[in-house]
Length: 83
Image (cartoon, rainbow, N blue to C red; front, top):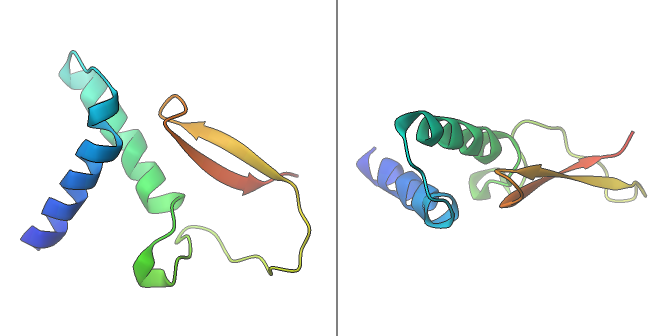
């Protein structure tokens, strides 16, 4: 488990903390909470065949419009189908 935690913390530092100046614990907790939501629900996971765990897979033949939803003030983006 230690290797998994170390890898996640390295990602948090590289993808989140290196890009923000955080002045207090409240802001740090909010930023990490938002990143964890993005990490678990929006980004593809290698162990799942580059699929997103929270949403079903759309067939590649569907021609759909996508929306980019900014996460962490635009540091990352969550892409979803437009309704």
